[in-house]
Length: 102
Image 1: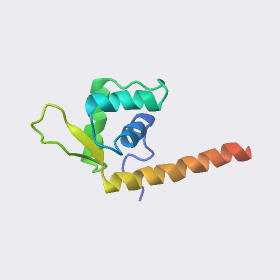
Image 2: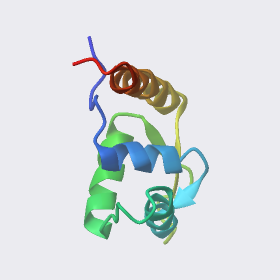
Image 3: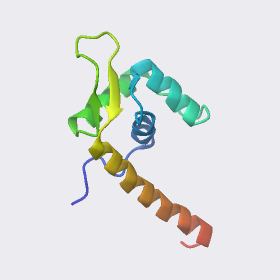
């Protein structure tokens, strides 16, 4: 059975990639924007909805104390496995482009 949330949306994918290191919300938004060369800007409401969903599925975890003003998150071991599955899936798509198939 396929894991929940797969395939990841572009936004969730970028959030998880950003969270390979511990970051708080605003830093996540900045890094996603930077990683996407300004093509993806995440609003705060979208970000926190995505973080809650990723946390619920144990793909990321809260590292800071829940009472802290700045919440710091990081991808979990399961989240790393999900990123690897997505990496393999996307490599397959790239190979189709390169071969000119489809």
